[in-house]
Image (cartoon, rainbow, N blue to C red; front, top):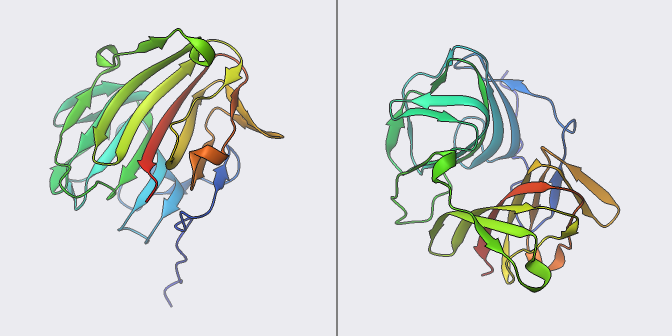
Length: 224
């Protein structure tokens, strides 16, 4: 008898916090790859947000992304037909794209599947040295740097880094998610170490503070 499946964290009206150790890595059926799902609509289809670890030499067979794939390489080197992408690389492959990804040394990536806005057909391949950082040196933003990765319609993906303990500046009138890449944040009495993922229905109700030198990924959408 096939086991039943329950969608994971798909009610985006709810605030969700997942920290390292909160879930177990799961083996992927197609390759020597481990997955840590954060959001999942269906077992092997639909909208998915996850951390994925490629073991050294792992390779996925060629596959198609019906509504796009977005990747941030967290460690190691991720590769496909387009080239080799070390830690810090940001990739977007639009709806209908195909590839056969692999990793010779192994890697860990943050992946979002099938979540592109209608009409967003941009292919993006940003290596770490191509990411453009802008220093904000005025008022409460002093000590923060921001790098926009992609923007389309009501969605913006960006990196933020903080050189000292200070409030995290998030766009107002927007919802979205945060992945802590380095350092740590506090949210009230909660501590979010590196590897933590936080999704909220409104950034305006999400007071966060960088505890130390900290780098985060921010994905934001306009409130409807």
